Image (tube, rainbow, N blue to C red):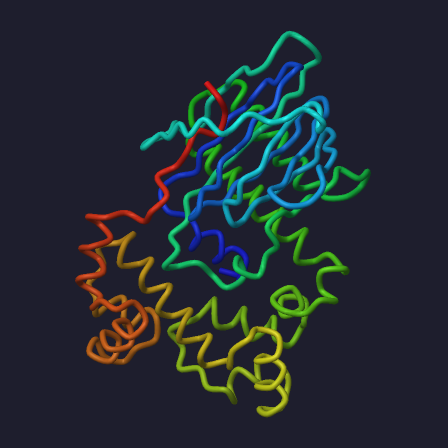
Length: 320
């Protein structure tokens, strides 16, 4: 798997939820902060205003996407001058995969698609921490055609659920998430600021990251990774550290252990097999490294995660 695909696979715990909401003027809603989650709003029909927790309201039109990777509070409204009501605080321990709702009065209609993910903070990839609180992708003609196509398919499945809809909706939500991240990280303006955007755009560092993610079990060295990158050992180590924020082998160790943590939770594979799959020659060495990173031995981590899922049990994504 490539880096962005791995980030999406790693970030989510449980299944995503989504709702198609018909808002009729006058309307407005505050969405409370939800640490340990990520969400996005997509305008399917009409127009509205996005009100961030800090900063000026942002006008949204058909096809616009707003992604909130850190679960910050925000508001949506038909009129940015109208005070927003406080959040309802309604929570759902096991929300439906997709729902429909109607909110507001009897005036002009705006339809949005809101989608949410619960995240496991123990496995959060540093890419997510590098993202700003709000990412707004406008529906500029000719931009992000794949994202718009995925949104149209997703809206169609939610409007008219049929056989296989659960799997299709989950896959399309992953696709939308990937298209949003791809659009953000490949924008020229973002890449000029360095960090992960520049790392993914850098051909040499990108090849090394891709190699680590596709084959974490290989006995990588700085020399062999530099060979993948097509750089000298010193040049590669310096460029990787500058862009990623840590040395190549430190990132490799983190990625191996994060992958192992996910495998411990999502599979019944023996610890010895997981150790081998992430590049450790012995279960003992793997156990020591894992405990240093997560504070628990692999077996205890697996049992505790099964008994106590990650925080962030979901919240109402539209007033009922």
